[in-house]
Length: 442
Image (cartoon, rainbow, N blue to C red; front, side, top):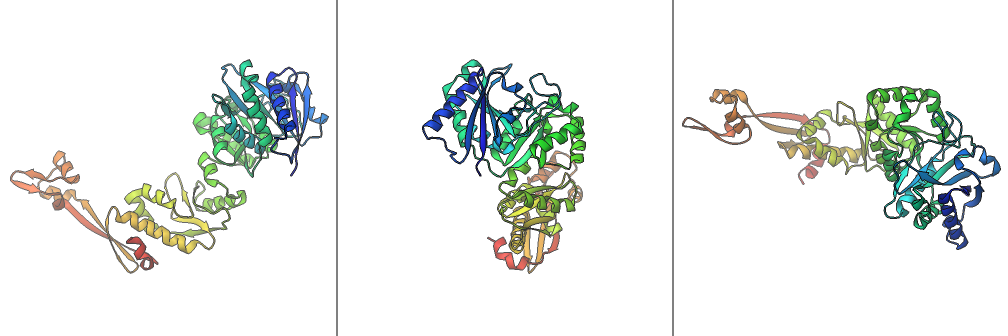
């Protein structure tokens, strides 16, 4: 779909003039990648941060403010952000006012800038922090920082220009963000490796004074379907405060692992899977493994006793093995893997066989097993302190050596580890085990 984009710079801003000049050169040479979109230029006399209502002077669908970035700690950066003020309006705009964001375009620009940034330049989001605020059209700032040297750098201007003309939004997950520093490091990393696209973001210093009105404004002006909280950058009290308000908005919270694991799964499919998981436990977390993005989710329960024995044997091996199976596993704070899984409709039978095979193989690497029909026998050999005491071995270094597989001597008598071990046989009936015995034995 063709989009009319207004590219606005200030006459007194060297970075904005630098970017605009390179965009014009690319268009004049016929090197503009996005011929489907219409770009119109506008130059203003004063600072862009004071240009409230400038959207009334253009009939554009979207506004890119081409600008400089200044910092108290100067470093070469290329940044993207939406304007707005959470509280005071010391840098233009209106106090406590947020304009519409363009998260999918910021996401696309951030990725293009990461590919094209000159050596030595860092690419980053910035949190919402200045005017203009009184706009009806979605907008964003794309900036070169942080000193006059960078503002006039032709390589930086060319990189931003080509990024502006190359940015192609994809289907994203629109987010609002909370916590972290002005440069939103965690949010930048998330956008770089997922479909998570941020609009309005409040840094940690702004969080204590946010109220439900501002959070709802962030949600509305971003078109957000979820929220991300940088938990490592906030106190427990601040996290609880945010979670209480987010619950009132109806926004779900997504972790970084959620956003990266969703991959290209349609948002509505993800929500169905999430609702299925929460039926088992309100605190459930989904973990995705080789899921087909076209899947129709199907829930099924798994053999709890078999899974428990496999996790006892080697939890890490079970989790690693799940990465080879098209399945969603579910965890809670108390359990690494619940005995229920989600897979695609029509894949249930094969996935069930694969899970049984994984669990039985994991157990066999730690314990001696026997399979008879659909019955699994696990022969658990364990150190028995009662037998050890009967043989005169008391707690201490000698007992420890026996437990770690070394023989010991008490007087003239040699006691081997086998002498103080007892075997317990645990039998589990697993419907369907008999048909996959050959897989288990491979």
